[in-house]
Length: 364
Image (cartoon, rainbow, N blue to C red; front, side):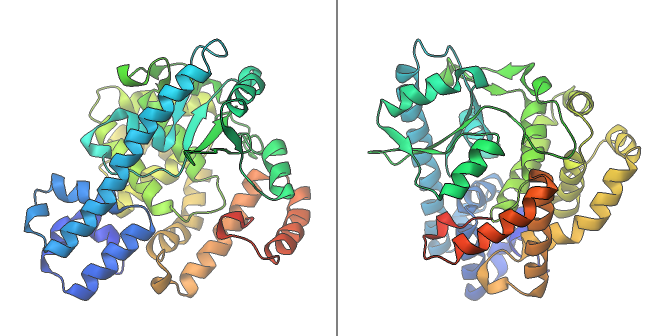
């Protein structure tokens, strides 16, 4: 096996049948650390090998999948509450990212863990939506004052909300793409079409092409890649599943042109091809060959992303991993903040992070 390890197993889960206990423990522990344990079980199910695995591995995989099933049940419960609390406030909203994949309820995306519920609400309705939720048991998440300023000024979403009793976290996006990207992108075409699974009415989901492009842009314009492997694997599964639709790749390229010049889709396609052997249609390759800047960016950052995805688990962290973290974090800041704000942000981040805090309150 190569140093990719967990990626190798996601590509070929039958590897789990022929490795020793030490490597099995390492793979299971890393998958749990990255919130990929449930998806690893689903991958073993699709390969029809789960019953052939040693009993301890089966139990670990099942525990990860139970977390996913519990989240699905919780999502349904929260949807019912949102439907009641937002009645008369807003007629519909859209579920995004991991929440959207859970609503699809497809075997391809089974096991995908999310860490909060992401919804999109048009900006003119945000104040009323927040007011309705705050009057029904939700409160703002406790974060540092500087992080509050960041959310309100630079982010595309409000300060996260947490329900007082159920402890569910909710992120309300009033814009689909980061407001401060260097390449000014137009998020409105992402809303032109949608999916309407009966179970999530009156809410909707982005269309397949919009879902993929949105998640690619969000993935490759962020600062922290702790769950980067989970997210790139989710994109790979979406390319495979939605790619079975006759017009998916055509619609995706067309949408990419409408949204604007961004290299995230190029990075997503090429990294999925490199890490998971994603088959890419010839016309898609020809389209991307026209984008020299995207090809240059991929050449510059390919190894950084791969190092970040490979050396996730603490036992694997080496110089390549640490260099990749610093490089991608700085890249993310350049994309998410005006240059004149980066130095003050770094100074404040160092001061805030030097004060004792919970891990979830670390400022990046």
